[in-house]
Length: 197
Ligand SMILES: Cc1cc2nc3c(=O)[nH]c(=O)nc-3n(C[C@H](O)[C@H](O)[C@H](O)COP(=O)(O)O)c2cc1C
Image 1 (cartoon, rainbow, N blue to C red):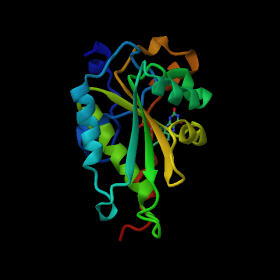
Image 2: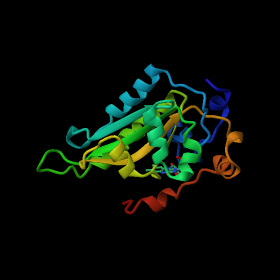
Image 3: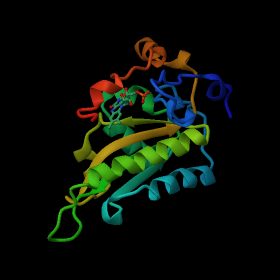
Image 4: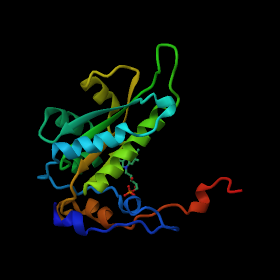
């Protein structure tokens, strides 16, 4: 395990105590371009996604899992927006999150994307527990990925998640390096609570 992973602390400044693993998760851009995730750990991380709750247990989340060095990884990387392409090539794995939008020929699943998000949240916390990091992305061309991986109209490409080990932020371009150490912020809790009766 790299020293950087063990020493960087970007823990959230919370208004109330939360589980340390939730506070400590953050989305880096500086990944270690040499790190390889062992297969058992990767399976564990994906298993965490499998055990996420979903509406009626329909389980609409699907994943395209591409290890660095595979042609699938390059395909996903090529589909990223430039501001993500600049750093995501150093991730060990790129994971495309796909939501199956229909339950069957007659019925849509209104919670498909919601459930995919929960599955990715599970995955990201399990990754954090394994000493790894995730960075979710919405900046990519979903149509390009749908075509490249032969997805149906029912299969919506929603996110790409970079998974890997923390790398040396000094290797990032200056603009990204600054963002890597910028304070992590959130809206106040009171702003989130539309009603708090
Ligand atoms: C659905 C989604 C899409 C995102 N898209 C991008 C993206 O395209 N590029 C990027 O650098 N970060 C992206 N992020 C990361 C967010 O900017 C980040 O989670 C947020 O700023 C909070 O920072 P933290 O995860 O370090 O707490 C995305 C996150 C989510 C959940």
